Length: 421
Ligand SMILES: Cc1cc2nc3c(=O)[nH]c(=O)nc-3n(C[C@H](O)[C@H](O)[C@H](O)COP(=O)(O)O)c2cc1C
Image (cartoon, rainbow, N blue to C red; front, side, top):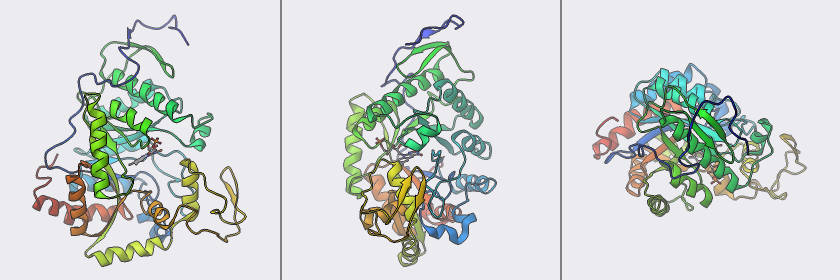
């Protein structure tokens, strides 16, 4: 264990190294009858669409993350009445014929730039912990973005599980789930301390050490920026309910009732620590004037799922692909692949529904249909306990317009989202 360096300025000992830790309390989480709507994954190529349909118009469907297109998108999101933009944290991408998520804007640049071109929406960034990035640097960069945005920052904490990314940072990984979330726990405590302390602090954790550490300006948000987490495992959920404020959940059966049960369980876990949380859902949206028209687009996209990209996603997320499912004569060495093109199982051994669900939304809850259908489903999820919706679209520019012109007016007509937050 390192010791206090001789040159360090005096610092107050950190009151704790792990959560629950909420100096000054938690940020405000909910507003009555208000569905918090976020635009998700706008900062990476193709967002949540792993379909070769994106190649039909790459500027609209794949490269929307590029500035100045994304700058216009951010302004449109604000004007449409969304509550926040939520970035996808990605360092490597999944390749395939479409180059799924292969390019994009990083956690700091995307957040700073979007803060500068908007005035009201929440600026929610995503940071990976576990890559040996110092909490001082992360706290400082985010505090400055919070300053520039006038206190609109939120941070999604990801306990990285991608071996390729650990290797990019010169590390062997991923570590065990216990260690991933122990690192996240220490990092989160350190961020909260730095964001809220006037005085220099000493933090002697197992994974991070800081001596006489202080940032100026401190976070602008009061009591501190909102913390988000999308953990799915029990260990991850334990961390998230102790330390974070908005939790992305996925229901095992992807039904409204499944979300209701999951939300109740997570509220219970948070309550054990005297905390409250907002439940959030990731949704992939294809909508149109009628159900039939939307489903036509869905079918067209489904027919062109980017198999190579899905295969990489599955391996990187820790799914072991059984060799029967692989493309015949595939040799996977790192990211290099030699393929004969013939297939044994078109769905890579995970079944049609799961395969298509990954291609059309990375496993998100699917909102496919007319504007009325989409509004009905959003309301049903909200009434089941989901407070925030991270929406991702095949065509984000059109999707944001459709929300503005059709879905948000329906929500207002039905008594929701009466005030703009
Ligand atoms: C809505 C949502 C957003 C996510 N965002 C990211 C992200 O931006 N970057 C990332 O590497 N992982 C992301 N993840 C993955 C989660 O952080 C997490 O690693 C995953 O759900 C597995 O949970 P576990 O770590 O508890 O096993 C996201 C997951 C969901 C459901």
